[in-house]
Image (cartoon, rainbow, N blue to C red; front, top):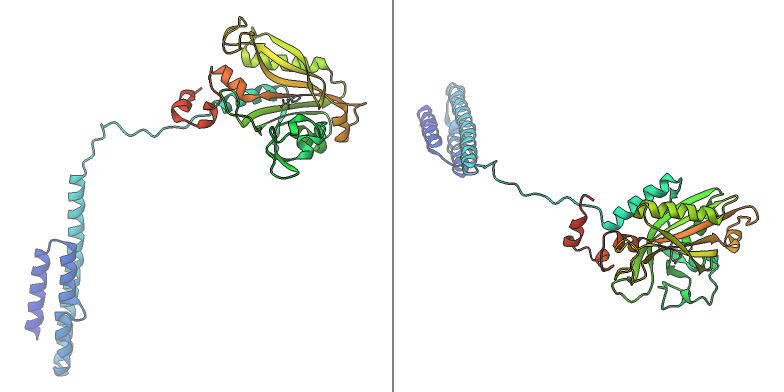
Length: 342
Ligand code: PHE
């Protein structure tokens, strides 16, 4: 039996030395050391041995098992190392090859202009607030002194989500929410998306962007409105730009104005962009109507204020000479990439 064990040991070691891959190694382990393996087969016959022989042979058998087990794991390590070496040799890497560059994102042109606009108004002491895009009839129209029969309420102009819910047609809705929740002095801007059921063309989109502004305090006059908006226009378009205030009408302001700046394309001479007029309209504004203040619990005999609504899309298309507003919404990478790093 001792000889048999010795033979298994020799055969096992030899086979392991010759073995060259992991699968083969596993098969050898099963063959020699497994439950149905050669060593176990011999150990099963131990019962036939005499009481003196049994511990001696048992010792030998254990030695053989240990030797073979160690040889298996040593060989496994060797094979692993060899495999790694081979792999490394195959996968040589040329670190001088040019890499694949991952594109870095950039700001959307609307956001670039909005960030500038926020900087300008924050430096004048305005807070930035947010308002919901889905509004009730009350905030979008009623509280803004827009009468029930006003054409803006027509289905052709407004997207209705129910009898009482609309997609806001103007950020002016935010004025009411702010006046309800804060006490004067108030100085806020509210940028955001607005929706109108317009036909899509180069200058109209059913979704566009406004930045609402509101100032309420004691003794606010039309002079404050003019000064503030002139300063804004000069910072956005440059100090040489002229600003003009035209009388206009909005139900929630009295008096109301529309503000034009000299066309940045032609400098005021008249061109295709300004349709020959030399001017570009950038915002609507006015002194907050006493009815609106009153509706929000602010006494119009004590406080007054002005509000304005800037068309962000127009500001962006004129600044970057973008000929079609639709480009701002299509997210075509070829278009957007031109604004990277601006
Ligand atoms: N909400 C008006 C519009 O959408 C703009 C505006 C805002 C006018 C605030 C006056 C005061 O045209």
